[in-house]
Every structure is written in C-alpha cells, then in structure tokens.
Length: 154
Figure 1 (cartoon, rainbow, N blue to C red):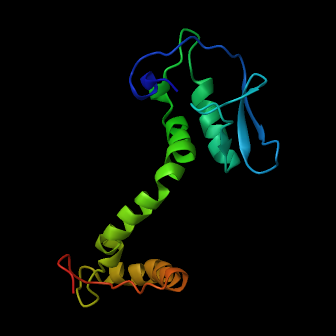
Figure 2: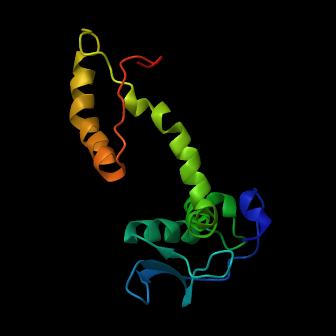
Figure 3: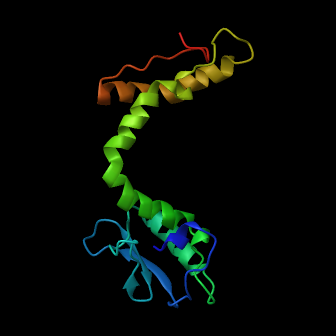
C-alpha cells in the first residue's frame, strides 16, 4: 500500500461494491474478495488469512470504507496482516533474538507470594493457569523458566 496507508489521508475512491470472504484456492486459509477480485498485499500478493474470523474482520474493515475514499487508517487489522505476511518473514530471526533477550523479564515469571493474605488467591490462579505454559516452554525449548516472587528477581 502507498505510504499514506500509515497516515490519516484518503488514498482513493472506493472501487468495489461488495466485500466477501471465501476459502483460498489452495484450501489453506481464507481470502477477502472485493467484488470478484482477491484482496492483495502492498507487494501484490494475495492476502491469505489463517482463519475465517480474521478474514471476516478484514472484510468488515473494507466494507466500512465510504464511497468518497478509502481510509487506510481505519483498517488496523489489514495493516497488521500485511505486516505479518510481508515484513515479519524478512526479519523473523531478528525478532526472535530480540524476544529471547527479554524473555526472562516477562511478568509471567513474577509470581504473587503464596504466604501473603492479599495475594493468596492470585498465587493459586497463577499456578493453575501459568504453570502448564511454563512446562510447555521447558519441554518445547529445553529452557526451564525461573519464577520469582519479587519484581527484583531471585
């Protein structure tokens, strides 16, 4: 999309009448259709969504556009989908490296103290909901996350 996709400007008149969704030609994913045309990314590749729900949400953004002009700033899901499909694969390893450097700083590792009257219910809920995720991380990546009961660590 043009640079104005990021700004609050109108990029052109609405050129389509009907917005629909359909299963992708290869049967893997969902497409948004503007009349009979498949919606494309800025690099002219067909926009393929991984779920019908996402395709319908993006279709709703396009259907919302007025006849006098397309307002990209009103289509955040379209912007995110295009970024995920076109930009993320180019820098995926850098994104993963950056996330892994900050992995141990995530608040999911900061556990409410179990001996505190004010947080006792929170602690049990964290154990119930978060521990399965931490066990999955350990089995999937071989990293045993360290859980703290203080913002200051250990």
